[in-house]
Length: 444
Figure: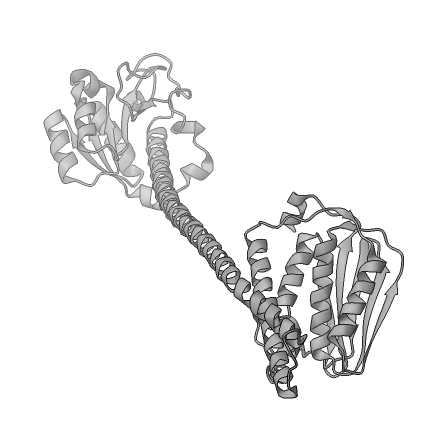
């Protein structure tokens, strides 16, 4: 046995493992790999292709004693027939057979590339011209023990390689599936983004059309209403002759309703211009004391006939802003206070703050519920039950508060409210000490 599988006589010369060429076979295979599937490999089926009778007998005996089942083919035709009909876990080709018929290796490989194919070789270097995937098995002095162990390790290595290949294929399949899903999600997200952008553009166009419609209609209504209110005032002055008490009362109702409607139309026009971005504030120092005194006089006139006192308190404050816009905001707040206050007082106050100034308008009117406060600055919000019962100027449209909030943002400020039902309300306009740049106001 030693003569045929080992050295010296059967193969000639000193023999050793070619470790650089066969990294997974022989001693370089780790103990853990060699032990994989040992029980299964002891009964492995091996196809031995060799035409040297002595080597066939020696190799078959060594592998059989190691618990393996060996079938022998002595030429290429027998090898192909057995390879096609059997389920061998390893093909072992002798070097003599390889020299006799060099096509034996390539012919077996054409049948099945997945079955490990080993070629016994006697020199330190493997035979020239081995096909890819063929493992050279250098003969060692240990004889049959070495041959059986080498085949076991080759099978273990092959099975581990196949397992790794299957795991790699599964991982690649999983990666492809994840990539496909990721691409599907990306495509869906891009589609949603396009739809959102189309919806945004449509909404912007619809909003622009709505603002333009409101501006056009309001402009067309304001001219005849101004005429009606103007002629009503002339008639009330009795410039064209005396009026009976009943006539005077009817004209006052007409004037009040026309004035209220004219205020609503003016607010609509202002809101439309603000939403269209066609309002640009001026920046000048504010004279707060004269401004609040003017508002006090107008409020006293508006509250004529009601037991309501109007008080003004001004503390020095330096503010640079748009006087007309500030007055418009405060006047809307004063009108809102007058509508809800039948008796008591109305307070106008200037309070310096760290950021600029706070302008307060407080009343002792009916106040508002928490539900109303949540919607107080919304355009055309429906009033509470008590306010829906009001008629004439006391009811109002609430557009003035929405307009005041928008104007406050235009000036870089904000509008706040505190209210309690039955005790009144307090509106506060916070303004910075100087008008912010246009871009900063737009971001706010």
